[in-house]
Image (cartoon, rainbow, N blue to C red; front, side, top):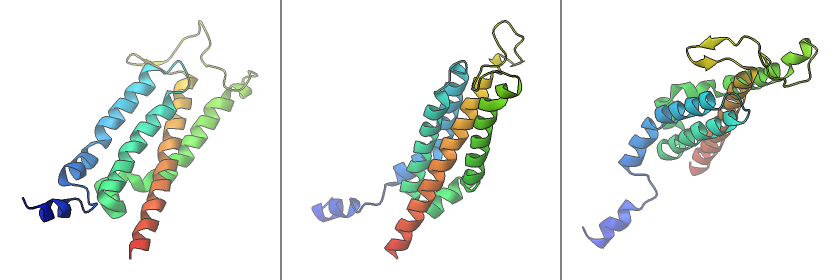
Length: 158
């Protein structure tokens, strides 16, 4: 390979390997995020970390594929505003639900010693709903932000 050919490979366009990884990474990142939320469901805080992990995978897709390519490869991205609003509503509802029962906000339900509803081995607590809400909110807001940044960059390039 001549030196001129190597310089042409560094044109700023991500290689084909990066584009393939950008298309495949959201699936494993969602699985890892689900593990973070399910493993730490009794404590609040894992929803944010899980949302950031998935948002980073989406960011790689936007960088490697461009706005149109990322949205074609991941059609669920068009629902990001709905996910953000739904996540905000879910987090607020799970945080303020205890007020209806006369408890302080963000009180864990069910309380200690009360029956816990389960799905398999996953116990359904209000912190789990709060984490899911934060997860959806983080993914939705960061995806909308990435969408607008990518669109404005493409428009400036024209």
